[in-house]
Length: 119
Image 1 (cartoon, rainbow, N blue to C red):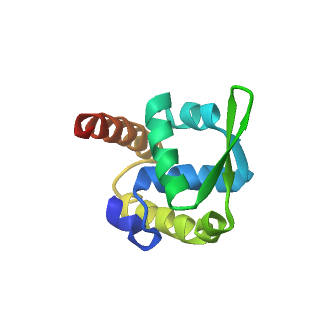
Image 2 (image 1 turned 45 degrees about the vertical axis):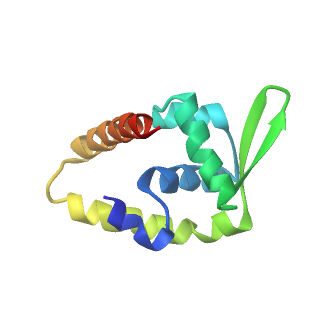
């Protein structure tokens, strides 16, 4: 799965977050976590890496944190979409659409657990 996003230089999780932010150009950090079913600490770690790569910025309003697209991040959107399409084409003959959604959800949980073990 990770090789599908090789051209972006991002992991699947990072590419998915960037894709979501790019769609809105600004997204509440909590909303990202809710959409991806990831814990706040995991989302924070993923976003910090995207900030270091200058693909997103953070904007704070009181206790609210908003994640904003950068020009560099927006430039990757087409490649992220192409990568998702390649990945989908690989799995479309194997999994039903419902199974594919379950696969993505389960994969996200596994990635989160593995990353917690690495820290």
